[in-house]
Length: 382
Image (cartoon, rainbow, N blue to C red; front, side, top):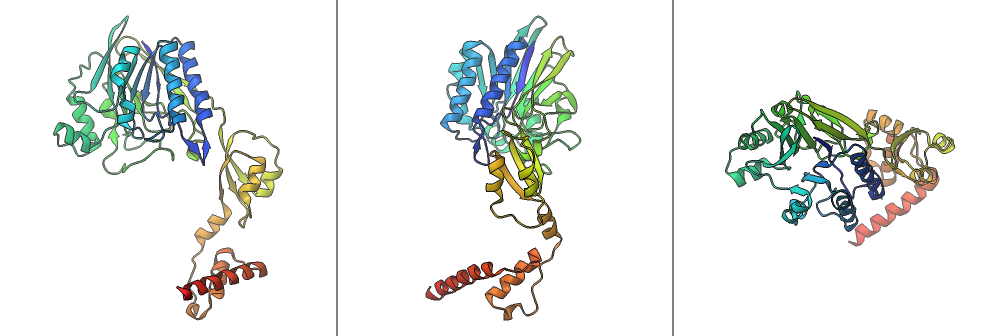
């Protein structure tokens, strides 16, 4: 039996107000092509379909188009669980009706875990679908005493009477750790890992495959078959050097699982450019369409820096400074002994000098004087 494992689509997400819908469509089309090319008829989607609980109509339309292609055109089966970004009520809408078409959606954790039986030449494969949940929901719904996420997972698994001599696949959307570690990125919501959220991946060792969603860096934990597919696109600067992929899984007889990563090629990549603004503006134009994080190494702030950068790099999504920040971090701004005796302009000039090691020029003084006088007048009027 072969299936494709993906997660964390985050349809509708943007980078600094730049929509990624076009980029997401390109990757979703690649996923359908991967299933065609590799004779895969089952897709596991492990949560975070949308980026927001109330997605835009454009995001809903794109996902609808994706599902229609998979199910109505190709007659594939699709199994979906909700993630922490998804609205369980909205995603669950009409799910019972859709099962007859081959779309299986689970948004509420159940006890025992909702199970589907799939069959191939080796017999039965049990697919367990455990969407994102919380200890509070579990305590309230099932009258349990679980306080941590580990307690919660243990409760769900033990209540399901799983026969581990059979072939078992689990889909879930939670934070698993191996020896208290995992690869995180800046684009997923990270809860209190030092407290209650982290779940020991070794707890899932008896499953034949665990299809995980939530962490955006593709990785396996504890065992190769306990795996995060990762997000379908790079959604933060921390993922720039993290290639994206889907996971093709082939389960043969018990104990024989073959895993291959299928690369996902973005329409526009995510890159970092570092240097002075002068260097970046005269550099050869090797980046045209890619999203760019710009790090300036100028010693002083550059007027209209982002506006100037976007002339050459129209998809620049962030601009920060390196040298200035390092300089400021090393400084300690100390209040002068006679600070209270200085007027507003002198106080600001001293502050400016402490931060920049420079003094206000005549133009800055004129502008600041007008602003101070206006503020003083308004204060006296009020």
